[in-house]
Image (cartoon, rainbow, N blue to C red; front, top):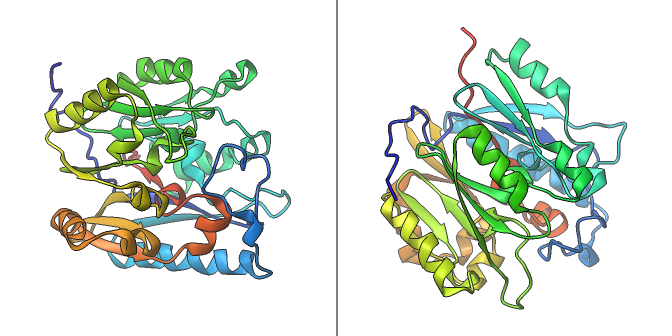
Length: 316
């Protein structure tokens, strides 16, 4: 396979992120069936308030490094418990493309917002030349939940996707055609043998590294193919254990700060890493650590899920 190289004028690490401050954070029964990270039985009375504090702390920590944080208020007139995870319905690309994604849970489809796209154009100074709308796959019962389902190697135009009830082959192939991306589908399971709902809990790709729970890819041929593709494209692999996967160590994101790359991850994830694993990450960027334990426990997602990269070009 030919390496596309680093010549497609898109950085792996975006300089800005889009975040949605949740108006009505809480458990979501519609998603619990396929997201085994959700632990809604452990609910506390102040979970919603704690989630807001966690959101604000992450946004502030990123902003302090020079990452441009574009915050949008949640929808108070709608009960959208997962709107803190905007990366599942939207991705934004350096060629001026925005992609809207098909989502499994009907309640989560209401998170998609045309006002956010309008604000990016009209108020935030970004250029959006086209919108690729994949939401028609919902009518066929097929889904692709943004950069939860997809882990992108943006410079080389490669999309890795763990097939699951939330990630189907047909929309993945259409995305590949629309964005001129090579697609690398595979299957992965947790330690109990259940399909892993989103790719971004077992794989994260930075500019020069990839954190991957290789043991989750049960098929030897698929595992070797994924590892080989990552290594062929110059990524040092940080092999995660199931314990680390369950602590969201794969749910991290490299971004571009004022003084170089930063790697955003949760306090839960950081605690799960040994010194060698931390050293690999620290060689690749400044660690930005946020305690998002409530969001992890109730929402079943961590830091990376809360961030939609803004790689769009400037309108100026």
